[in-house]
Length: 196
Image (cartoon, rainbow, N blue to C red):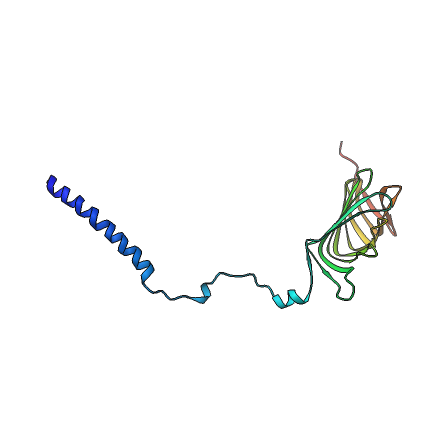
């Protein structure tokens, strides 16, 4: 019994490595058809369009206003105008303005028309306005300048520290280094007293 077990182990020591070598060699030696559809997928990018139309990915334009407020304009991408490269169309735009007193106003929009030379811009497409003082507003469009922080819009609605409000026009301005929201033209305010 012990002899048969010993001869079985000796035989397995020879046969098992030989079988493993046979399996490995069959992986490399046997022909296999190649399916071109199994190739590594590449991003579907129109190379000719990329070569023809220049664009900036994740651009950032920053500066300081004449009254000392810091501002930074970022976007997912921007397409410069062919005739005038200082004019750009940007997508997924965010503008952040921080006054010298650390008050913060953030504007977000689906798209923007930016004039880098004239420091002016137009924000369009569900513009969101958030301030560090507690305002959360929306407007269909805002336009203005960055060198003096002066933005104007119409049909503004949202929530503020004292309740919900709606106004025909909004003016974001800067006086003496302090940013202000000025509401005009038919203001409707629903006052919500603070909970005690």
